[in-house]
Figure 1 (cartoon, rainbow, N blue to C red):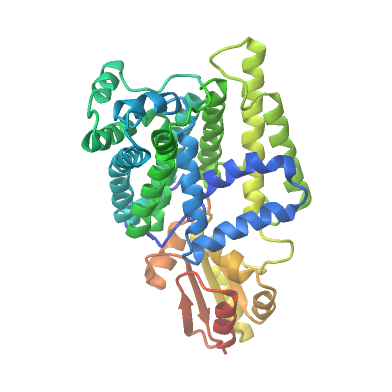
Figure 2 (figure 1 turned 90 degrees about the vertical axis):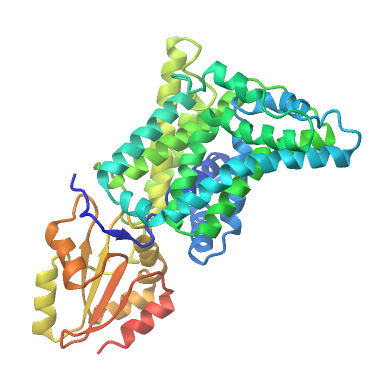
Length: 454
């Protein structure tokens, strides 16, 4: 595994990772029974990617809120709701208004813990983006996700020491200040179940490099996490008793962690994935997900049951994880025929362009570069762009972890004086550079740039 050269920036990389993948995987479990055609998943992926690339974060924030709400249904949080609401006095409130205000103070306490994490993560976005381009960092992150996943499955317990939990539980008391304090420490007590979700979310926020969105994302996550506390504290609602179903929620998060772990390793390990979409690649993974869920991926546990039950759990988790990965890879593949016929040798392409008197199109990309992948899906897969590219000599310089070489990085950093990805360069027929693209553009803008090259 070859690490990237020091100082290489990521601009902005892996926008389809982290939260996007976690949310897509969670939605996948809800949608599988009703999937009737490839268009359903394609539409979901396109809506999510479009929202992110256009800066319209409404869908992303809704998914973040849903992730917070789902976290509240885990064993670390759900059984504590009724007791916690009583501790800060909402159960004893004289009116619904007082109960609502106390509950609001509690939720703001949760937000006071998590929101700064989003801001800090976004402020260090460049460093995180560069780190995520390093295979060694990706392996470490994947190992962390796998460890958290096995904890979610009940293979081992990830929890705070009992003494620390008791001390934290004694913080605060009745009243608005007490409710705020209890909310703040509640996030710490719930760390074993919030940790996996936060790891994914903070990774995503870091690569987005938006301080405003980073703070807002973690604030919305806090609202989701505190939603049930607010409902119980304001309306004195009696929630269903906790039981095995909360363990099932943990298993869902565990599978999401595994999917993310192996998605991060896609450029390090020889994990097969389609270059173009096909029905076979879609329906086989869907079948694996259905099979895995049926035999015990969610409803079985490593904590209890016979050896047969534990074996079913393991096989179910394996099948569901592989199937979910396959569907996500299908989402990221191009439609059949929607691609430019790239050369892979820069020197040969440059010589061919010179001798044939044709312009040259140079695309620097990598599978870890989310912006590069989005640029290909949004612009370079357009039929008009593909047709126009036939008058060019197109060459792709692949900087994926398993294909990058020192010569390729020198070409990017020294010859083209570009610190990071994405980069698409247009050369006139005389070899001079016409212009370059270093960010996301629409198919119309990309086509217009091609047409200006002579």
